[in-house]
Amino acid sequence: MHWESWAAFWHMGGRAGYVWGSYGALALLVLAECASLARRRRRALRRLAALDRASRPAARGQRRDAEPA
Image (cartoon, rainbow, N blue to C red; front, side, top):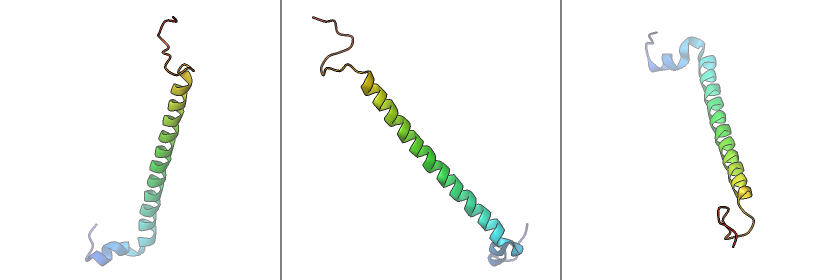
């Protein structure tokens, strides 16, 4: 496609609302997906940390692989 000026490019032959609106909607959806993935990652890391803490022995200083005295 060939435009005579930058104004004609931004106007998109009278379809600027549809074209730029769709680009804007796509950008919002991509940002929402990134935010959702970051939130899910943090939640998964917290769950893994909780599982790790729960699997440790109850007494402090006691190692799981240590033999009882």
